[in-house]
Amino acid sequence: MGPKDSEGRPVLKPIAREEVKVTRWGIGIVIGAILLAIIIAVALRMSGGVPLIGQIAALILLAPPLVRAGYAFARDGELAPYRGSELWIRVGITSAICASLWLIYAFVPAYLFELKSADQAAYWLVGVAMSVMVLLGAVAAMATFELEFGGGLAVSALYFVATLALATIAGVSLANAN
Image 1: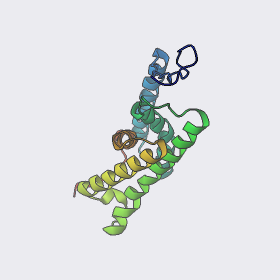
Image 2 (image 1 turned 120 degrees about the vertical axis):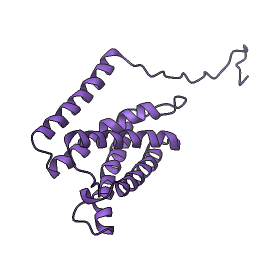
Image 3 (image 1 turned 180 degrees about the vertical axis):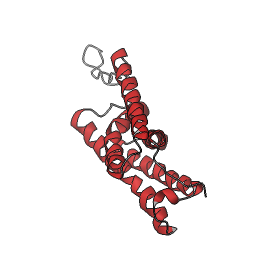
Image 4 (image 1 turned 135 degrees about the vertical axis):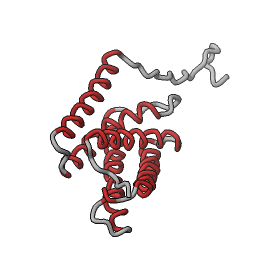
């Protein structure tokens, strides 16, 4: 199969597949980062809440590691992974898009339904806004990382579910029961 030299040996070599190596050190870093984020969220809740600038900073700072982790999980194992500056440029683009998608939650429902702030929105409205945010984030991840829809959805959902969970732990009001 394929071209051979004059002695009958294959000329082309197959591309070696790179397996993802999960180390104890890597698992420890991930677990430590998760625990640190939860501890910070609990501390902020106990201190009386998170100011708006802190919420924005958290959304921006959490995006790159969550998007990077999502890509490591969702990438196609048959394709060569992005590495180095090419990877981090793509992580930066997707992170910026995902973090800025929170503007949909922050401004669109309040504008459309004449609310004083986004946290006055009903739960169903927040659910619709979050669904739109996750889907747009999935499209962004698909485009930047060249993923299938399921992979893009995994990257996007990881970011939005993690930030939503941390916001809830920190006591950030996201909706109104009325």
